[in-house]
Length: 365
Image (cartoon, rainbow, N blue to C red; front, side, top):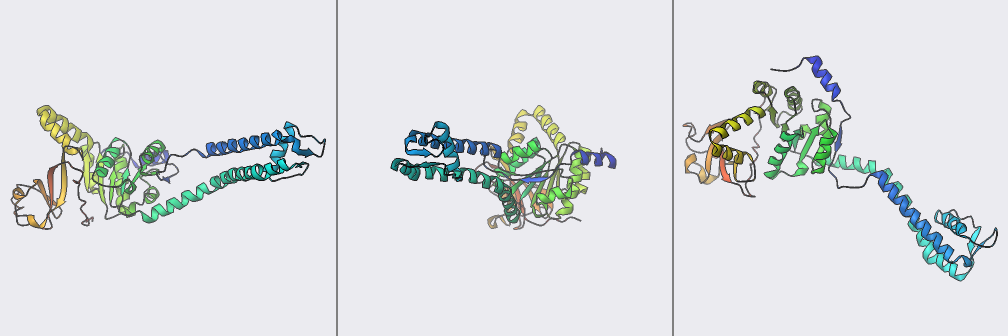
């Protein structure tokens, strides 16, 4: 097992220590500073329009200082009027100017205040609204899927499970990279930025309420630590982990993983199979791509199949899952199918085909 010592692991954790936070997917909106600038420009446009309206009818206004209203006086009047200061040194005296104040200046004053006050309230309530969304998200999140690592393996795993009917709202991505979390939320997944080897980060992803956990970090030692932490927080979740080196797979299983995929080994075997038989390699590649061509599907045994052998079913049965054992279709111990069995079959991919989750509780000592 190629794992660094405790000191090296501690140093790695310190290097990846970031302020862990939850980021929910959201619609693309403008940045707060850009929103404020945009509102200020709109308010300035209202002010300029009001000043020109006043100056167009400056004969109907009286300045207590010199009696006449210049363009500068018009801007001054518009400013003190829209801001509701109202010094009263410049006043409308003609009927036309007063009608203009009633039907134009007053609505513009209200619009001016709405723009400025609305911007202030929006900026002040943004944090409160985000906290409300997070609290509501935590309260309704149940039986979801947590994916640790949003690299190539993590993305492919999410695409596969979502192709079988899992909603994006039921996926939470954990990654120490802010760019990876931004990419995840842009695709519609909730994200938690932080080091997944730390229990408080996994708790923010609600791991203790998750149904399944996919662990696909860049390093094998990280996968071991995350698996240990996740299993400690959730004894019943189904944990699937990926490792690079074949020799590290047993340690992942001892740490609590239900299934361990050796990424480099699997790729190498597929390459070797493709060399021996390119057609067989193409079939295997097709099988592992969910939602296209041929799919591997796990489903329960229906009542009409009870008492039959795997060869007598309508589907092409590859294996039979009985209890916690996976038996080949030609295994003599299979005998006839039982109602509690589950079948691994090969079917033509259609929108209705999907892997039915195995909801039986897992036993972990």
